[in-house]
Image (cartoon, rainbow, N blue to C red):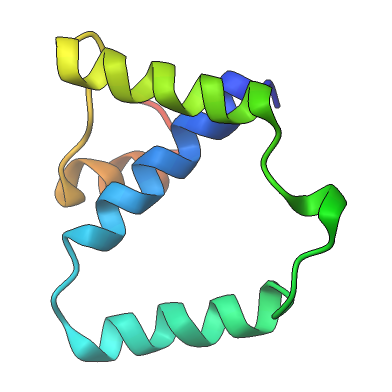
Length: 85
């Protein structure tokens, strides 16, 4: 996966997480992160300048309206359809 794709995926996940208000859902996400992501990150796990620049570019595209984001319903439908519109 390209750095831009990774940055876009991270941004989309962050935006989806920000829209969650159900405490049970947040607890399940927190549990997943605790299992899948180590508590302390190694230096090599830190975001590189290139990754950060890619993330900032995705934010700028979002602000300019160049990137389409999906609603929760659209996202679920896409997941169920294997990414097909």
